[in-house]
Length: 333
Image (cartoon, rainbow, N blue to C red; front, side, top):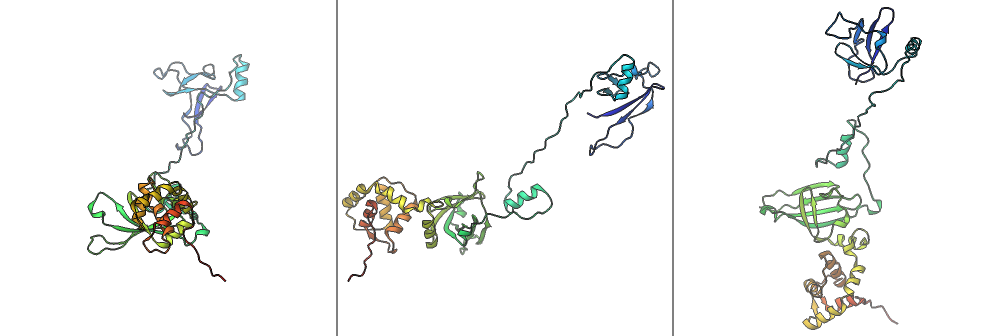
């Protein structure tokens, strides 16, 4: 819808039509749509009757050379003139409500190139701004957990590939390296540079997602987490309340304590004096406990504190009954 200004000259019954330009309307700045002249009522009859002031009223549609135009308003002089002729004009009106196009910025999905923050910055403008500060936890500076992992894939050439996954607690980023294996046909090295990662549903990968036996999917690749190093086990056990619930020994002791009688009867029936990690797993499974491997490792690390590989079955019984596992002998007088 375009707006025009119609000037009618009472002296000779001529009219002109001027376009009303607005800023950034995208139209050429033509000064006139119609120069001053007499306009016929019917374009098919150019010598027929012409428009006069009596034909111009608010709400009336006139035809300017096959261009229908509706008169919507008038100035004060025009109103006084029509009032003096006994034909008052109606109130001004807007035939069409103003419509403003609402543009909604749509952010395209992350394509995997670069960091997600940098990709989002390129969508908001072409001028490079100050980079956004990433989250950083100063109380966890230098804290890194490491897991051995293997790729979960249907391809036979990927089944024997081994990886080392590192998760940096200071800024919730991770990296993946692949140790080189001779004659494997795969060049080792950096599989994924250090960066924040997300699950397929868009949620961030957090420390709670890392434990022995977990499957972590990164960029359409699934990894089964295996054993961790000693430093990682200790770190997870010290931060077990918030980030690593499967390393919470106090919680696990309460869970195992509910089966203290069944555990004692199991060892009495099977006549075992020394047990290994596998024996402990078989025992807890036989009494009805369904624990994750990370939880089993946490229990075994408390039972076999010195890392001998074999311990007395009584330590597991004491753990279930809530008794002290290790006795410290002090010096006497």
